[in-house]
Every structure is written in structure tokens, then in C-alpha cells.
Image (cartoon, rainbow over all chains, first blue to last red; front, side):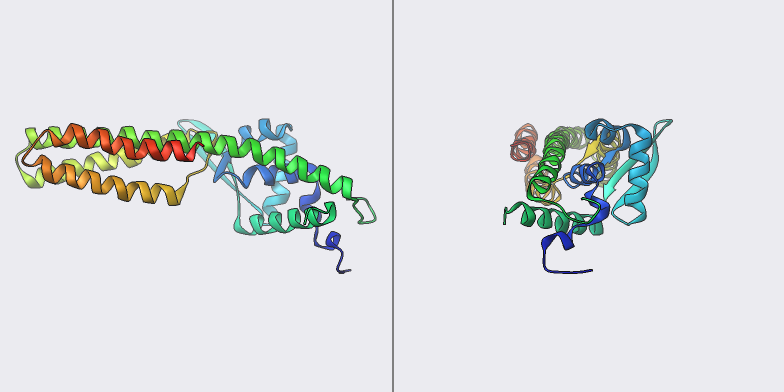
Length: 100
Length: 142
């Protein structure tokens, strides 16, 4: 159902507090290492992994795997679609909170 | 969001605060990265100009000088990329980097041109060139 109330513009995928924090964190950087995002967002590795997989599936987050020396590392970055979706979601939240 | 799809003003504000906290923390990290990244460029380009001065003194052949200069730039680019890969997060201020690179190119070009005749141009160029990147680092880290 669609309507004029700003709640209709909320993205259910981003509305989860953890996923919102992940995306808000990534919006300020080009890319961030998995472990660093985990510490910053204060979640466990399995939780971040699961939430990231959902965001990746939606095309909001890009996951890049590689090596630094011999150590495997994973980097997360926000896609253009993800940035647009987050901006729309935050705008809807601001409208609901009466900030606009 | 509540199961019926509703969300009140307080919940929206709470969500905005949480997003704000996450992005503030990332912004701080991003600024720190940008400051260090630009300072690294400053040090590396200063080292490249010093290498250029040494090349001019030690290698009179222009073709070999060009190759040596190319090798210096290659080391600079690969070294910087390698450093960036080891960081927790990257946030390159692309527009600022392009502007600084253009400004540094003018400084380096003048240094090399004048340095052909007056070798003293190199230390001055190294300091001014580093100053360009240091000013950018200060700007990015504000």
C-alpha cells in the first residue's frame, strides 16, 4: 500500500537498527574493513556477516574480498543504490520526526 | 518499525540519532584517513623530487632520467595504494586530491625546469611541494 504519509517511504530493509548503523557508517567512507565495521557498529562477526549479506543481496552494499600480505580481509562499501536508499530512508525519518 | 508498519516521532528521532552516531564515528575515521593519506602523498612526492635531483646529478642521459622518473612515480603510486589497503577504512577526498596534484605538478614542473640550471631549486621545490599537500591535509582534517 502506498500513501502520502512519510512512513510509506521508509525502507523496511534499512529500518533494522543494525542495518541502519552499518549503512550510516559506510556512507562516510569509501570502504571499510569488516572487523573495523564490526567494532564500530558493536556487533558480533556472525551478526554483521548475516546483515551484510542481506544488504548485499539488495544491492546496497558491496563486499570485496582480498588479501593484505597473507591475511584474508573483507572490505565493505556502500553502492550508489545503497546511498540513494539510505538518503530516502533518512529523509522519511526526518519527516516523521518533524525535522523538515 | 512496528509490526503494523507504523512508527512514531520518538522512534524516528531515535533511529536518526543512531544513524548520526554511526556516521559521526565514520566521518572522524574518514578525516583521519584523508589527513594521513595526503601527508603520505606529501612525503612521497617530496622524496620523488629529491630522487629527481639525484637523478639529474648522477644520470646525465635524458632518456635514462625519464625512465628513472617514471620508476619513482610507479613506486609512489604502488606504495600509496599498498598503504591504503592496510587501513581500516578509506575515504579519499578525490576532488581535493586532483586539485592538490595539479598544484603540485606546477611546483614540480617549475622545480625541474629551474633545477636544470640552478640545483638549489630542488630543496625549495621539495618544501613548497610538501607544503601543498600539508595544506590539503590540514583542510581535509578540519
